[in-house]
Length: 405
Image (cartoon, rainbow, N blue to C red; front, side, top):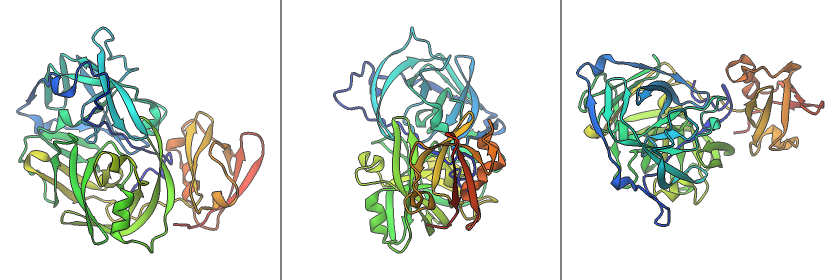
């Protein structure tokens, strides 16, 4: 599966917390003053694979421990500091203090800070240190259930991260290890943003830095300036919606015939184009490489060795799913809510609006397990098919599926 955009819940979650805090933010404990803790990688860490599942929003979800308590977590190299959900049972309100604010998709979010005794995932353990605390809505993973934690670059960057997407497992290794062969690209943890960064070549233009963001469910994202510089004027562009910690964001969407990441060339890749002044531009980057792209490969992220290694997986040369309906929807218990009507699509042409509610597809009521049911395939169905959509007000509308980008 190249993207969750149309395969499960047609919603991409984009998450990012910046290391930088505005000077006006009330930071009781600034990032520089925080206890970083002491890290220990077990001698048998290579054998300690951590199993995961992919959320409907394409993120790596797994179980780990904070202060001896099991928590659900997302692996998020686009987050500067590991972030605990304010609603998580792992939050100790007696220890929670103000922590300023951070830049996120959709705007700015308020942060808290909570010291921890121990944090453990696989063969990596940390004693001392702490976690940032903020609201973490379920919509950020594209599923009905929220997670407790986003594991950020502060926890991960001291070691190599081996992600085996095909086997749904990952592990932490000593920096410098090369457990498999593949094509390479540069990688670092930036001093400006404290996140993983690399570069891509789009058209004839090298774009850098781009954040390597395992917490971003989309494929490739670039700035408006980067897209213009790439000179891909003949490609049709539609629009899409993404959700981050601070709310929704609308971007352009196109399928590019090829792009390069280091020595590797990827074919038929989904690219999102942020508007001028968008998130990537605001934080001084050229875009992001998300999990929607990375999941087609086995991936080694080793900023200490300054390299990312990509080995093609079984889906690496599979064309991405394209919407033929022009509707991006979010699943609620017994209905679908239209979150975005894509520009130039058949839904826009027939008067669909954001907020419309769908309760049946071709006469079949929306099931509670819709995100993982075969029923989701309607939105990217065969062009020419006519789908009958039952609205929750009792009316029905017919929608003919077409190629439009």
